[in-house]
Each structure stands twice: as C-alpha cells, then as structure tokens.
Image (cartoon, rainbow, N blue to C red; front, side, top):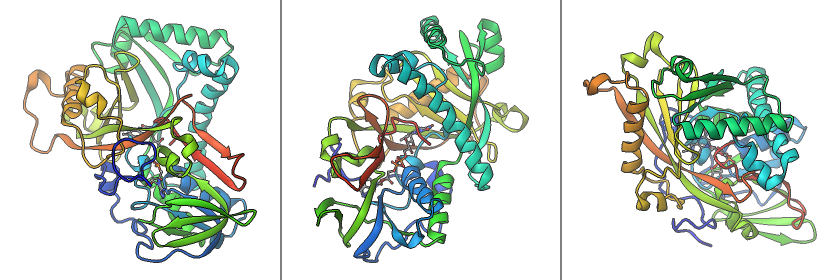
Length: 416
Ligand SMILES: Cc1cc2nc3c(=O)[nH]c(=O)nc-3n(C[C@H](O)[C@H](O)[C@H](O)COP(=O)(O)OP(=O)(O)OC[C@H]3O[C@@H](n4cnc5c(N)ncnc54)[C@H](O)[C@@H]3O)c2cc1C
C-alpha cells in the first residue's frame, strides 16, 4: 500500500490536510470525527468508501430506495467529507457549450451533446434536491458569466458555441455580450466578450454534512479516520474490506474515493490521476460589499488553461477565487507540483498570481492600489485534490470484473 504524497494515483489521502474556508466554518458538525476510535462491524450489506458528496449521496440514495440505514457503513480515511467536496471553489456551474468540441473529439458528437445536457441537469437536480429537503447549504441559484479576456479566447468560445449549435445543442438559455456590453454586464473593464447562463453556488461542506447527517440519523454508520486499505474476495459473492480497525465482510462495495480510487482499484492507475488545485477566500472591500456585492458567478478566462473562477457568497459576502491548475504563467516548479496528493499547504506563487489577477480583472476592488482596511482582502488559501480522468468524464456504475463492486469517482473538478 502506497502512503506517501508523491502524486501517485495509488495513495491514500494525506494524513495532515490543511483546512479550507468551508471546513473552518463548519467545525461544529457533530459527526466530523464519527466513530474515530471504534472498531468496524464484522459484517455490513453495503460499504461505501469515501464520505464526500459522492459517498454521502450514494448512502442517501440507498436509504431513499428502501435500504435500512443499519445495512450501510461509510468508511472515511480522514475527518468526515474532508476530500475535494469540502475544498472546492463553491461553484455549481454547468459547462453550457465550451467543452463540446473537446468532448466530441474523445466521445463523438452524440455523447458530447449528452455530456453537456447532463451538466445542465446536475444544476437542476441540485436546485430541486436543496429545495425538496430544505438543505441549508447556502445554495444560490443565479447566472454565471464566462468572460473572455482575450480576442483569441473569444474566438475559441464562438467556435465552440457554433459547433455545439450545429450539432443540435440547445442554446436557448445562453446569452452573449460583446465588447462594451460585456464590460458593463460583468464589471470587468478588460472583457472582450461574455456569455451568461444559469448556474449556482453553495457551501459544499454544508451540503456534504447534510447528506451524512441524514443517513446517520436513519441508522447508517460513519467511521472516520478509517481508510479502506484493501478489498479482497471472500467466498463467491462477498468482499472483505480491510481497515486498520478491523475487516468488514460485505455484499456490495461502492468506491466513492475520487482521486484515490486507484489505491483499491489498481486497474485505474493510469486513467484516474490526482491533481492538486487551490482556492482562496477574500473579504470584500466596500466596492464589493453590501449593495455592491456580485450577483452572478464568474469564470474569467484568458485561455483554455489560464482562468479563474469566482463566486461571492450571499451570507457573509466572502469572495471565493479558484485558479486553473495549468495556468501557464506560473513557474515550471509550481506547475509540476500540482501532480500531488499533498493537500497540507497552499502555494504562495499561486496565491500571489490569483490576487494580482483579481486586482487586474476588477480594478475597482482596491482602486490605484489604495490601502484596504485590516481584515479586508485575502482571508485564507487552501488546496484540495481533483481527480483527472483520461477521457474527462467520471467512472460511474458497476465494475463488471468485480461483481458486487461499484464506483462513483473521477470527477475532473466538477460534480458537486
Ligand atoms: C480546489 C478545488 C476547487 C474545485 N472547484 C469546484 C467547483 O467550483 N465546482 C465543482 O463542481 N467542483 C469543484 N471541484 C471538484 C469537486 O470538489 C469534486 O469533483 C467533488 O467534490 C468530488 O466529490 P467526491 O465525493 O467524488 O470526492 P471527494 O470529496 O474527494 O471524496 C472522496 C473521499 O474519499 C476519501 N477516501 C479516499 N480514499 C479512501 C480510502 N481508501 N478509504 C476511505 N476513504 C477514502 C477521501 O478522504 C475523501 O473524503 C473542485 C475541487 C478542488 C480540489
């Protein structure tokens, strides 16, 4: 079993993770350290490995389908929901068309259309779910701007939109703004063009915690700091899940381990790779506070590899700024260091780049470099591990070669 943080896709999650803004604001979740000293039961019908949004939702859907909670055990290597689900940039943002050409190249146009349609469906489903179950996860349904910061990227987007339209893609929900209109709509003086479509933001840790709380209330058992280290067949249709606190024999195993799936499923080693990503929380200056708060979310794009994501939270006004992992303006050392499962610290160069770019994009944030007040500006920076798959879509479904085992992993920086 690999355990170091050398970026192998066969690593367990790092044991000394930093805390994200989302985690720092939910430290009173009562099941954060659930059963951390207890041994695991020797039997369970279902073992869900991983307690992020995929693991929590899998358990939730099992119970909704009538499975008694007592038959479900969730194993988590660290504290509850401490993977990408509690470390992301807070966007619930479908790809409306941009990825169409790229998906088409790999999967063909028919599948690419389905992938884009599915992105939209996820937003609708999150919205429905949050309303139906009254989830207090600060979900904010709004619209998002895809802002093109260069003529080259505006051309790329226009071509993607055209290809998507030509293939029969629905564009009825997408608005386009050029030049000055784009600048006025987005508050970004350097914008070349912008597209707008429905999207949202949420407090992802609160959503993950809601799922876990709900299944625990109905009898499911969560074991934190309890990694699954091996899954071995026992008898004809049973599996032994090994953990440092005992072995669970189970009928069904669901791998919700995202970037770490290949530890237990080595056949995924080259297809599902960890990539470190970084996000930042900022306390707004008056230009972005009170009635000046941003009402939309943003993807601010210089090129396909160089972009920033931005949301502003309704409740506390915090801005959450994400950075593209392959930003070519970063040094080669920083770019190389993203191939890692070490989420224990943030990278200073990325943070400085993010702040500089944010100030360039929104010059009225701190006009003429004028001083911000103590307490305004960068609040916190953190990292998390994204799972990148070779065909840019996740693995979801039964694992044919391992009857009784299922997977829901490899979300490519999406999926919450
Ligand atoms: C910095 C950053 C920004 C992002 N921004 C966005 C965004 O704005 N919008 C968006 O939609 N997505 C975003 N993402 C991606 C999104 O967060 C993930 O795709 C999503 O949370 C995946 O959920 P998951 O439950 O599948 O995986 P995770 O949340 O990673 O959960 C997997 C869990 O499995 C546990 N685990 C792993 N191996 C084992 C094992 N062997 N035994 C027990 N437990 C194990 C891990 O500790 C972890 O808790 C971002 C990700 C990062 C890191």
